[in-house]
Image (cartoon, rainbow, N blue to C red; front, side, top):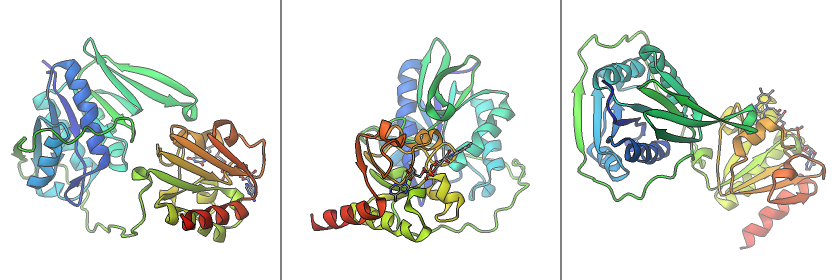
Length: 326
Ligand code: FAD
């Protein structure tokens, strides 16, 4: 018999839960209040006492740590195996994962191992009458489908910025239960030899309140520095359309859109971006959208809060200079 508990898969970076994990805890709390269960944050690997306390503060009733030497480094198959085995034994009603690179890789593997239903890329979620219901954007975000998983346990992958983290006034002394997995208990078909963490000092797109994004209207790859300069003055992250990522002007990690990242900053400044539906899919939920484009008919202006019709090569340096003076 499946219980009423809500599990979230907690991801850590340098001993701190990722921002998306804190959002998942808020989503988990919301569902648990409806299901009458408790929120368990599941860690595959290790967690420091500070890390566990943070999970408690942001809404976890219980922290379950599945530990095994092979889980010290990320391998989707081993982490999925450990999670699926724990779900099978403990029978939570719901398992939520974040739409991070790791979450999107682990979630379908867990669902397949369990034969469970999975709602991918949800922007909202609800629980009624033993059913998990999620809102999933389709066709580049132009259609919002409501989907249900009627058999439990149900899995959902939540997009970033779908829930706001709770204020950290939960329980720092949350119970931490460690389960050591038996040697040989994981497939271990992939051995992670090295993990290289990129040290860029850049603001991450997913965490940014302000994003300055560049598109093909910049004309040449060297002009992307105008985007970087404005971003630096504003303390913003740098985004990009797929057109300039495909052209090799900037790395893929900057791409915003259907096949890039979904962002929801307070301010999104689109510079020389036409506003193709696939780009809008990743940024249409930004609070304020500023578009700079020399074509007054560009589709981006239909969504923009503020529009500047002009040459991006003139407008960007002018904006940077003006903000520098403030
Ligand atoms: P363009 O569409 O070429 O627009 C350039 C704009 O710059 C124009 O509006 C032009 O008027 C303006 N401009 C030109 N010169 C200047 C100037 N000097 N000053 C000011 N403005 C100027 N795209 C994404 O961005 N993200 C995705 O994740 C994504 N996923 C996709 C997935 C699929 C399956 C497909 C088919 C496409 C996807 N695309 C994605 C591509 C998308 O359809 C567009 O081709 C792309 O977004 C266009 O990028 P752009 O706006 O930079 O270029």
